[in-house]
Length: 260
Image 1 (cartoon, helix red, strand yellow):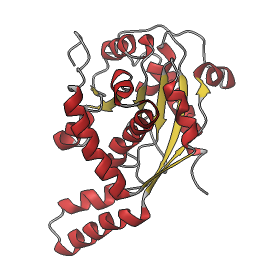
Image 2: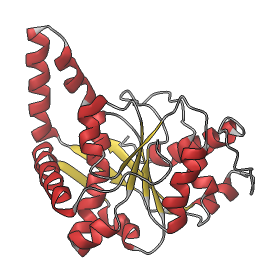
Image 3: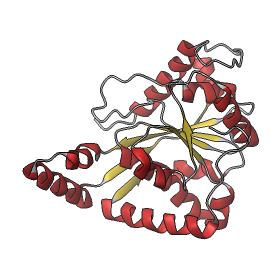
Image 4: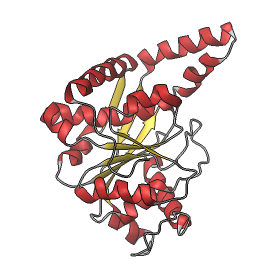
């Protein structure tokens, strides 16, 4: 990652084109946002860390997009463009095709294998510390079966070291397109026909984004006795267990929204 500056947003006219494409996908799949009033926090003049579970690649795109959609509907595209949230993603997420959609909607790539924390410190300085919001996936990896997960370190690190204690907005994503999308890669005609059928059924079945009311990160620290201070090292491995514990607590808040 080039530490001179964050990847610049696409020009506004190109962003509008990407927005229209994603709007079509969004309407086809029949997205339902539950408790949309809780998204009001995105319109306030303070940083928000949007945290989501990570069931599939397509949901990774449509989750942030529905936050943007709310902002645009409330305040217009100019407001959306000025207050675009950055999506923090793994550098190996879904290959180049997925990144073509994530980059225009503010994607920042993190090399999870590199233990150098400087990119994270730079992202902090350019986003949360300036009052800009970000989208994070505390699980780090896709978890379509929603069983055991290994929390990543990025969400805990960024939330902990933000100079402005952020609001945390948990969103539970109730959907799973990965099985349908990735089975299309198999050579089996029968499997591919079934996959296309599954994708078509999303038109009727839809995906739910269940939005919880936001909470303050400082309240999370108090509730779980998280230390007030940790050194902001150049190697994230130092204190990594604390950062992963924070991510696990964030995931706990998200999974409380899981339908019974």
